Length: 286
Image 1 (cartoon, rainbow, N blue to C red):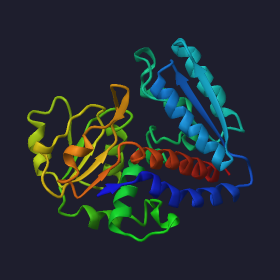
Image 2 (cartoon, rainbow, N blue to C red; image 1 turned 45 degrees about the horizontal axis):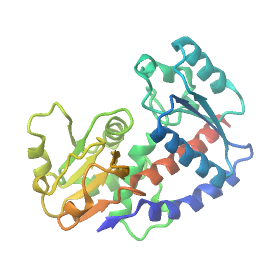
Image 3 (cartoon, rainbow, N blue to C red; image 1 turned 45 degrees about the vertical axis):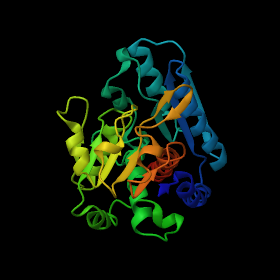
Image 4 (cartoon, helix red, strand yellow; image 1 turned 90 degrees about the horizontal axis):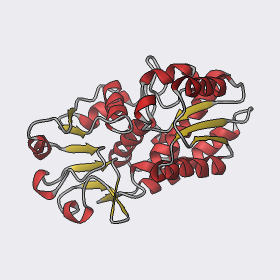
């Protein structure tokens, strides 16, 4: 059965709107992008559209050419300390000369809403999006409010969901596998992380009850999954002008018990959690 992230998002969006209305000061998200990648520009556009729907201020700082490291850091710091800024994100991946985790140290903990910093109060939005799909699958029917992950209350719930299920996470990139793995670890969910350097990765996939794939290449086919597996796709790739995921739906739909749609799957929930974290950031700053 196909899982629609859009349907899940529509249930949750109403709750976010209520929370935004309940905050006295206007919320503002600042987004940095370096370069002119069409895919990254598309992701920023989606974030901007949701900000408009939620009546949240959105500032897009687009550096079309690669700045020197010091100038980039100072610009991030300048926007981060602005009292009108509620949260700051840096669109990843960055060019190699800017790609270091130290850039997040220029954003205060309570404004770094993607959860990159050490001792952050936030879980990565993409990790929360993945867990929300499992909450939706195993605990229906739920209201939009109930679908949001509560780190304290939901630990036992996820312990039950993942008990005796073999979980495989494919990929370890900064935009997918890394933050998802961090979230799974934070909720004490056991998993095996495989990647391009893993010997015979298909053997792990054949035994998996759950596969979360965040690669951006076709890495899963019908020969390496078992009947009843749950497939969560996070990776995206463009092939012949079409956006595709880490598996072909037509190959796996009769084998998997559940699988996310490629377009409108995990993505919309991920973006919604970005704004949920922004709301929580506003509460911390108050």
